[in-house]
Length: 488
Image (cartoon, rainbow, N blue to C red):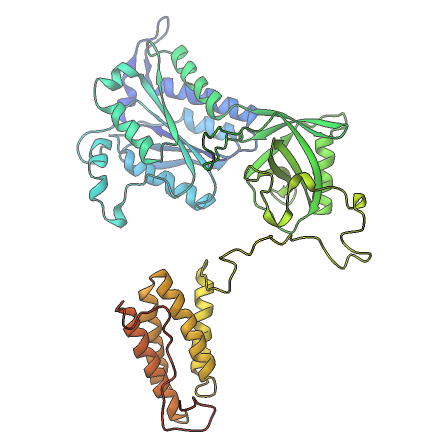
């Protein structure tokens, strides 16, 4: 899980604080001290994770792109310059851009905002941004919630009393709420000093960056492992009194299976040494054989281990967590019933591996397991439209097929309320009509114009023409031959 550190470099961060027995410190110095503590901890315990450093005032600047080199991060921190006023909205938009360019919108990310709680004045201040959140147009929306899964941690180089004297605390809490409530605000306790900032960043480390130590067990073989990032508790919504499920510190490997493609979710760093290590053996075996290993994380909670290449020379042992339950993968059946094929009364794969017991067929036919049209990706919709256009070019020979595909798309569009699709396909058919060659059968032009007109009527939403059960039928013409529609 990558981390973006967003550091306030406005003039308010240069305000002095008195530290006994030493020269005068600025709030920026306390922030740098706390971040140095965080970077040192991550360099020791989170070596595989990527971290980026962004500074902001009225503008934002990417000081260090995502990197595992904490010396570079520390050097950029030490060379930080002072700028002008605070404009947090632009900085949050910058964080969103940086993360999406590097990781897309599916990778979870942690954002650590380090500020003194002075959130600017006038236009561009956080107060002004939050007051205008609901008046925004789509192209100027507030950057929160982030378009990727995230947690926002706000580290205030100020104590709670100072923030509550103004509306800064309320604004920061509203910031967390806009991000879906994912995150937390940390303030310094007592006077502003090195000890207080160490305590505050220590709480962040305990909350978000503490290593998860566990034992991986398979029969008599065991291995100590660390899991990065720390697995989050999972709450099942269907339960009457839901209790968050947590990953146990002892995981049991329960079997292996072949794999073609897997997704990275959490990374595991084995504690390798000179002595034989089961985790290293397992990682190497899964990598060479292209297999996955099922692992039990707790009562009725399972996952899988597999090798994921980080580069041509480096790979990590990965762990993906399934949804809690005894049957997280319906096609695989109940996990507790899995076992070696040799224990079965007869070989479930046949004598020559010509059959497979998977996928397990459901006992009851699902209502959605019918031949219906679904468009999960744009490519699926494009394929259906192209199929109609291909048949349109072969009219009247393909009249029946043309109307069959047209009605299938029409029903799906009506079911989804996708009126614009019907209108767009109608325009495509009208265009095809104008492009017909002189040698085309006269019936083709009639059928295309008729189909386009019926789609336009359906796109109006009028119940007379947009009935789901109604089908568009071929237009009856006086032309014959060429496999056109029969007169009814």
